[in-house]
Length: 497
Image (cartoon, rainbow, N blue to C red; front, side, top):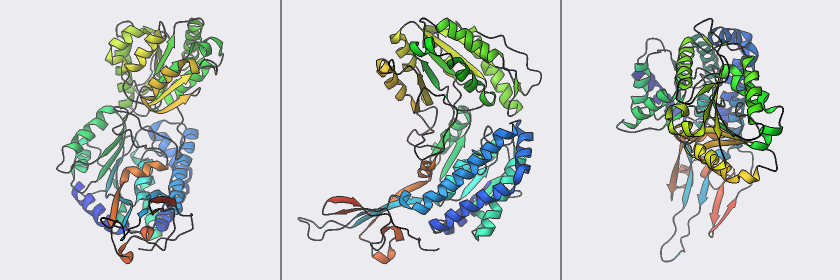
């Protein structure tokens, strides 16, 4: 917000939170629907400006706009259903011996102002009104967005849509604020402010780790939910490498998608050196060699890609499989594909780092035991994938089990790019792919990052939240005579604030 210090912004966010936290779920749902409608009302002006700022194609941006509005609507539906608060009632027993059992009732409540850092590679779905903002607003938290410097006009347009939705719904104006100061210091001050209760971040490992460390040094440490990317290993079993004619094109398409600027880009392929492997390499290299250098999101990302790619390609034992094409502008990134033996890969930590762009490294293994050692050498990943024929998948059950320990989403015979926005989605894996593998930044379960449980003991009915009162039967778990049962789902309008 122009002219306001970070302290002013957080003071306003906290004051608005003291009102917004009591706003009914139905009103918050209506608010999310209003944001979605206002984003649609921006028409193709939003798409045009986003395309100018990011070099992303209009078709991709239109799909992303749909994802943005659909996830807002999904959170609205979650609020209307009501069971997400996990209301639980353990009724008291005054006759229990030797001591009476207290009446205990528990549910989830919003934690306070949340700072959201906009992402560069998803200017709509992971930025100003993206999944982090949507889930925080749905939970009852207020939001301060630090917009990404790569698409300031896009962020400003989306912010205007949110503010119009606030006005239409008659909500406190400061439940959402945008900070357009692009400096690192501004972000640090937002994270360090005593009124900030959580941080959401999507971006580089360096950026996410810096925010995580900063939050941990506060007098009151707070959670930083940082999604920091990964190399998303793909294990290729011998049978499918030998028999599939479509596998090379499938993998090349995923590696090159969006000029490789997806956190789920398959940056590592692991395979056994068996019959068909050499032919597979030639076909994959031929598919990728057809691609021309593409414009990346901004010059900073392009420069980082070129540096990391060059560093990786010059490591011991790494062989380039396609002739690098010359970038004609500083914003372009040329595809790259390389090969390395398992022993050189395991011994070199640089080769396990993400190269954010249209790049992938193939690791050649002599046998299954070496393949296992490669997987065991990997750090935490957002995704891991196995491609195999139906009859060979069970044979490699142990490999699949090792992959499971390294990732948040395990994929069979499909590429990792393309993240479905549903309750079952897990977008977050073991460190360093994210800072807390128990949570997801995609799907309606993302709301659980911004709430905490509170238990009420022996409270009068009138002082309990509506969800915990005896008269209400909305998705409540009850314990009577040591038997847990779930109440029938009924339509329920929460008390109006």
